[in-house]
Amino acid sequence: MPDTLLEVHQLKKVYETASGPVEAIGDISFDMRQGELVCIVGPSGCGKTTLLKCIAGLLKPTAGTIRLADRPVTGPPESMALVFQEYGRSLYPWLTVRGNVELPLRHQKMDAAQRSRLVDDALEAVGLEHAGRSYPWQLSGGMQQRVAIARAVAYHPEVLIMDEPFAAVDAQTRADLEDLVRALHIERGMSILFVTHDIDESVYLGERVIVLSTSPTWVQDDIAIDLAPERDQITTRALPRFTELRTHVYEQIQRAKRGEAVRPQA
Amino acid sequence: MSTPADTMKSGPRGRSRGTRTVIAVLYAVAVPVVLIVAWLIWAGVSPQIFFPSPIAIAEAFVNTWLGPSLTNDVIPSLARLGVAIVLAITIGIAAGTVIGLTPWLRELLEPVLEFFRAIPPPVLIPVFTLLMGITTSMKLAVIVAGAFWPVLLNTIDGVRSTDSVMTETAQSFRLTRAERLRYLVLPSAAPRIMTGVRQTLSIALIMMVISEMFNTSSGLGYRIVYFQRNYLIAEMWSGIVLLGLVGVFLAAVFTFVERRVLRWYHGIKETERA
Image (cartoon, rainbow over all chains, first blue to last red; front, side, top):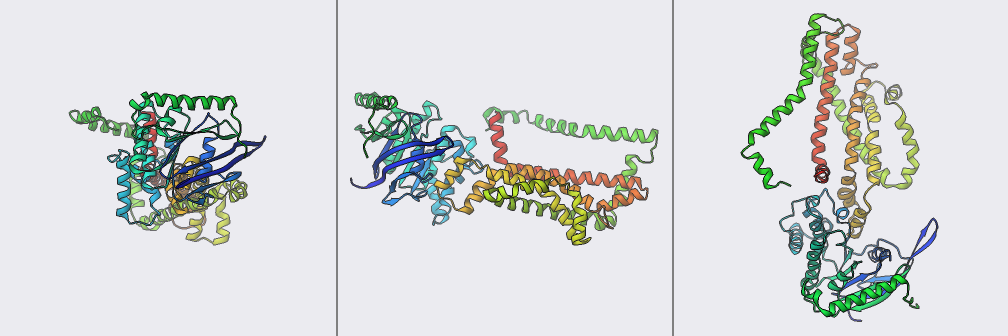
């Protein structure tokens, strides 16, 4: 496979709890290429967040390896940015919007002008160039999530990881933010790994949709989304192909919930 | 956030804001004025030797505290108080941060800290007098040792309860240790720390007075005891008034600083209420 960016190989995560070990992730393997937008979708409680935390180097997997740009992930990698679902708890309320976006750049070797340019550029990319001096809590939920995205954009990561970022915003805002993610991917060529529980969202956004099984999790299906790269909330979602793909993903999730899928032999 | 309706209000009806301020001031001073007037009348009707009239106390205040006593007693006392408060807050935050961020140290020290905290601070005076003699450092040590507990314990609690998502954010963006302290741990603990500072201020004032009541020959606490022993009743009361004013001044400075440090915190509170 050319230009493999992220490589997850036979990942396994077992939590030790008081009532014995709980296997959250059974065996997950997948690759992601440079410049791809991959959606991960699965039934609720299937260990999506656990998977992301392992990829982000925040959790130590029980077994298996993760490689980012050919380097093994053992702690939070340098070239990865995260956008969390809980935007209210991921932005720092004592810093302005600008301060939040700038924070991860502070220890990087660059002069103040360059840093300032990166922040301006990122705020512009998410349409918040006017809000730099506001505090996050003065903004709506959707705008706060834009700030979190701007922080990730300014960081110039090799891969952007988003953990159900739009689960807590209303439908209107959600559509706008989805288009923002598509725009960042198309215009800036960002590689994005997008986790969601929303089937429509995964098909609309992704070039590939990886369907996870219920816990202990493995990859149940890996579907190429052969829709045109230029997507539109109204026309794309009305395409027969969109409906087909959505139905396919939906059926896979239903199978996953019923536990019908067969676990791959490692 | 201000809406067009808000800005309209302060436009044509701009006077209403001034009127509101006047009313607020009237509310604030009404009870003190009534109390002082009642006291005046009472002192006129039936003079009491231990409760001189407010006028006598005001005279005593000017004669006592604005004379040589200003440089001999008031300024040294307040200087000690100021230095001790700065030391107590600094030590409290520094030690609290280290203990709060080091789980094994916290578990090791927690029972001991609870014990020392439970000791009434004034009993430290005989101990420190034995150890350090009757010196300025002894007085400083007594104030600091009595007053730094609230900041210390609140900092420990505040520092250890940093939000998990905020911490993961800092980890994933690989913030350095110093950056995490400066931009995450301390700001997020600031509301708790300020709660501790407020208590520290009032304990420090109490400790300052008490530390000057034993074995000394200067200071506000000494003066008040001296006046009482010599039946200078109005002077004694004027000292108590002075201490009350110092307390009010400390509270005002605290509110001023707190409003600035915790602007975001009060902002969130207001947004949630709206």
